[in-house]
Image (cartoon, rainbow, N blue to C red):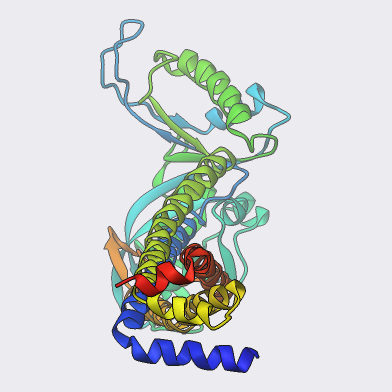
Length: 419
C-alpha cells in the first residue's frame, strides 16, 4: 500500500517538476541561509572569545589615566601615575578579595641576538603571577620565579612571535643569551601567543628593570589576582571602594571616570556572556525568520498544487478513495520534497561555512605590533544542521497538511466541476 502511494507521489512530482523545483528552492534557501547565518554568528563569537581569552577571569587590571575635572586645587587633565604602594591599597580595601599583586613596568629597548640580529622591542618588568593573570601558556623552559625577583636576575622570557622574528620559527632559544641595551640576559622560557600586547615583548623581573632603569617608584599598571569578584555587583563594590581610597591618595575626584581605568575579568565575563547570548540569539532569530519564509513558501506552493489537482482528487473520491489517502498523498509529497531539498540545503550550508573558514577563518589583521584573527571558526555543528533540517521537514509536513485537509473535505461533485 505504501509503495503504491509512494509511486503515485513520485509520478505527481515528475509531472510537475517546475512546481517541485520552486518548492525545493524555498526549502533549500531556508536551510542554507539558516546554517550560514549561524556559522557567521559563531565566527564572530569565537573571535571575541579568543581575543578576550588573554584576560584571566579572576584578575582586575588597573591603568593610570588623566583627570577629567579639577579637584582640590589641581587642574583638569592632570596625569595620574600609579605607584608600587597602590597595590597595597587594594589589599587594604579588600583583604579577602585580593590574593596577589603584579606590578608591570615597560621600557622601549633594542635587543640583539648572539648572531648580531637587532630588533626594536618592548621590555616589560613583571613577576611570577603575570603568567596566570594574563592567561599565558608556557611552551618551553620556565617563567620568572620569586628568586629571580629577589636577586634581580638578568633572565628573560619571550613569546612565540618575538622568538620567530629573532631566531626563526620553532627555534630552541632556552638558555641562549640576549643582549638588551648592552646588558646580557639569559632566556629561560618561551610562552605561547594569546593575542596580548605582550606577544612582542621581552619579559624580565620587575626588580631588574627597576634597578637597571631606575624605575623604583612608579609602575605602568597593576594586575590584581582576586577571588569573590566574579559578578558585576561584587566587582562594582570593590571598584567604588578602591577609587575612593585612590582619590584621597592621588588627589582626584572619586567619581572621575578617567582618572583610573579599571576592569575586572570576572565581571567582564558576565557582561560578555550576556553579549554573546544576544549575538547568538540575533543570528538564530534571523535564521528562524528565513526558515519560516521557506515553510511559508512550501505551504503556498502546496496550496497551489492542491488547487490544480482538485479535479483529480474529485475523480479519486468518486472512485472510492478515502480522505486519508488524499491527505497522505499531499503530505508525503510535501515531506519528500522538503527532505530532498532540505538535505541539499544542509550540505550547501555546511560547505559554505567550511569555505568561509578556509577563506577567512585564519585571516589576521595587524593591530599595532601584534596580529589578531578577525573571523575564527565560522562553522556549525552537524547536530545543529541535522536538527534544523528535521525541523524543516516537520514544518513541511504541517504546511502540506492544511491544503491536504482542504482537498480531502471537498465533495466529489464540486471537485469534478472545478476548472
